[in-house]
Length: 168
Ligand SMILES: [Zn+2]
Image 1: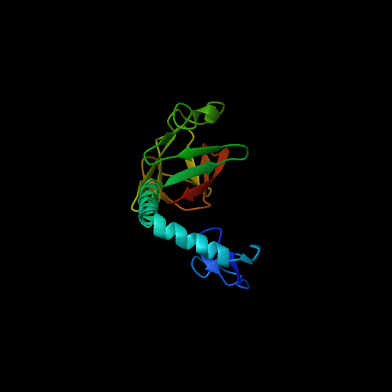
Image 2: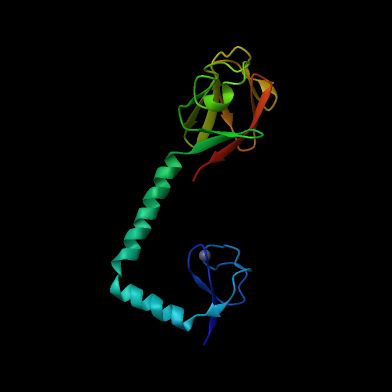
């Protein structure tokens, strides 16, 4: 009987004393070593019986990854809520995020527009009454400014969000 650690992320069998998955670098220090002879037999049986299925699944996962990549989303994180923003969304009291923003009279009905181009998110103030601030600086209206993870974005100077960008 030999022991090994099965990586919870990719399923790779690792030596029992390995702290990091040899395949995907996942931290497996807390994964308990198990007897692997039986596991490997089961694995072989599966492969001989349904050899094509794992490959099809792998292909599918890759496709999904590509789709998600091209549909990057951005989350505006406030103190007690968050607004999920997709490419082309307009945020405001009568737009995306209105459930929360309608309570804030300083926020314009259509306050700011978000777009995603070539891997970068941009914000554009839509000539809002009280302006949009990025890391404390007031943005010129109707111009796009790039956003990065952790930026502080404020609608009207009083309501501040942290920018969270999700690329996958
Ligand atoms: Zn792994």
